[in-house]
Length: 213
Image 1: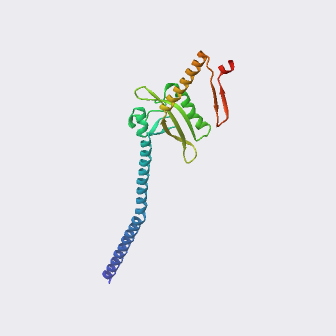
Image 2: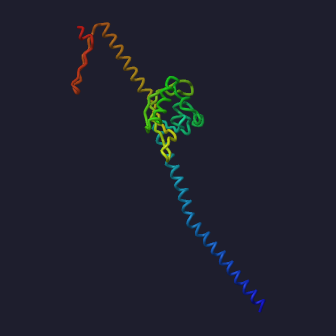
Image 3: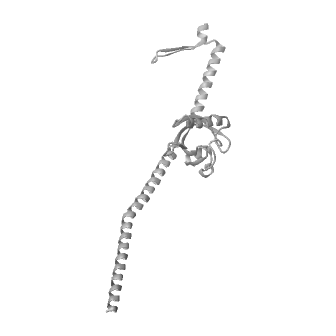
């Protein structure tokens, strides 16, 4: 009788152990079923985000507009190849450099002031025409559009910048000013007056020599 009782208890314990193992297996399976899709969704989301970033990067690469991410103190965190090409660097060479290292020395003060003004005045973005310094020491005029990115608490985090090469436009403007200066000088030397009327705006321009005449 005693042996039969022991046998019965053993069978019950084995049954309970088997049931517990089955329960654990079911729970683990349920966890895999429930958590698996979540991890897959995260992986898919990360892949989609990476693809979107690459498409976004390619768009700017093809348009020739430079893009750069930099810290609040001006160190480059990431740049696209178009911006690196403008400066004659590789992307790897630019990472870690500062925006001041690739800025014409004469434009460093205003570059620094503009950055600080965005932070101190609570503005989100600004635009600045400045000269960028290439690796070979030459420079070009660029139009900088800069946006201050804030963290979840609203604190300044980093800058995102877009840079457009406007060297040709600046050269055209300088040539136009030079031509106007030469024209004015020649008129003064030859005593030729100049009169202009804008029919659309109904405005007039009369050179000083006309009044003298």
